[in-house]
Length: 185
Length: 218
Image (cartoon, rainbow over all chains, first blue to last red; front, side, top):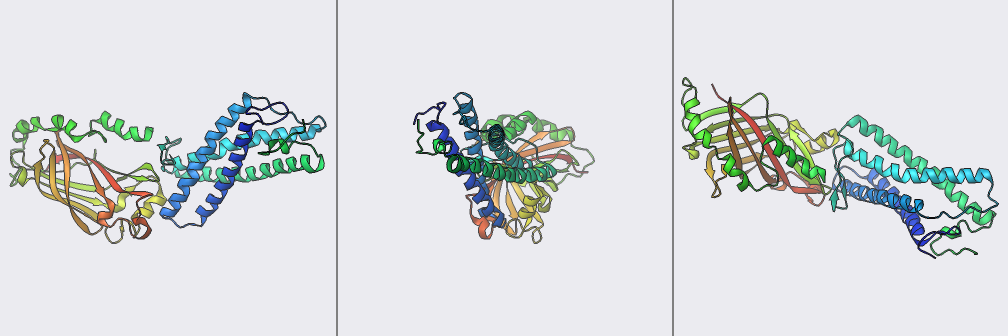
């Protein structure tokens, strides 16, 4: 496995960013569910501290990932891939990239709108993105939840597409993104 | 980062005690040399000479009482909107100068209704049982570094503790401007019962920053 991508397979950094972000998003989901079950108190503040810190981490990784994608070759889809599959793959990839920016940014704005500044793991306090505004907060909260539903739907489509390539088309589209996956060529 | 700087910049622009500057740096400007000479001369001739000095009360506007604390490793801020101040000041007789500040605790505002209600709740400020906090000082003193202080007691959530309150007095057209900052520990006053006794997510230190426009009492 090379560090950079090739036109046949994903390199180390692309794979690492892909799976790290997947794990962090699952972790965000777990923390958010836990936070919903907690009463107001230090434990809730702490759960949100983790959620916000990991969210900002995802945002940072998203910046690196987008930059890396733009300065690297992208492995080709198989020649036999049908046009509608190409369109679907393209649209879902664009959406997923947009969501790993939009989710953390809307969350960060939620905090700002409630006048709760965000700290990244206690190492640095981030500036507020918007002024305190309860109505804006309600809208951002709705948006954050809507974006999450869209993320779940698009990620499911994305995973289904990868599984179809693997089990039905029997090509290496899934394998070439697996951490230790190998391509045939 | 800008959040740390904003209060400092605001304080510098408005001439208040900078948040993180040492008070010693402020003292030379704050030592009210002008007050020394001007106060007796400008005192209203018909005002009854209060024992120990001139009486001042809080003007209708130009007052602020801010508090800040660390929550989830970030600086959180709020204000108390309602409070009253009475000062009796005698430059020549600090020991007879007095200060009384009464704060309506329920007037707090952190720009988040949810948090305000939590802060007013029984486990924190318990506004229902302790609607007012009061600072009362019956003498002033100068520290070795020249900083003027009120020597008094703060009663908050039913707990009374000694508190020396640093003060900067500046003469104004109507009277005096009183400002300063102090840090108190919330748990000293029982602000934080049950789970709220933990200080890792909500810090024990609460920074108070005040500025009061005072008019000579009639």
